[in-house]
Image 1 (cartoon, one colour):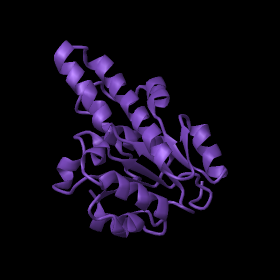
Image 2 (cartoon, rainbow, N blue to C red):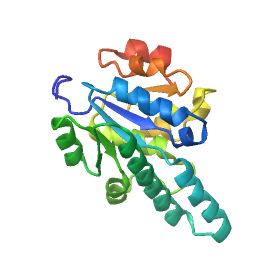
Image 3 (spheres, helix red, strand yellow):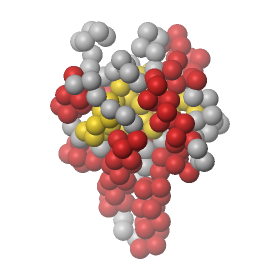
Length: 204
């Protein structure tokens, strides 16, 4: 598959933590609306408050890590509905074929990942796994060239992703971290003409 014929070039993982930072979610959806046209993207949601609710239940009533894992992934599906409602031209998708159809129709696919991840069950059922690693696995499955993680704030890049993210991400997929207070970098990170030379400068 050549770069020109590739259906998905970039996976954009929108962090759930944006919902807890005043104004951050609105800024990110506005930036995505401005920067996504004519780019081969799929949006993958984080877990945010939906996953936090699962963590609370996990501690209170001891539901076990298997149940908590799948409930947290279902939390990503809930956030997918939020993003789809707020991004013009977006459409909720669940499978790879639906992503292809959305792109061919000129729509922006927002992936609710539960069905796909549940069928493949590729990752450990542990709180060490977050939506970052799930997005990394999906990037590999989609043959994407890049993953861009949008986070609410900056800090040590090694602490902004979970400990299994880099091990889950295929070596051929470059990754960038963009923060809600520096969204000018999102247009740069989504530039499909960028190669690995840019990866070293902006890599998480």
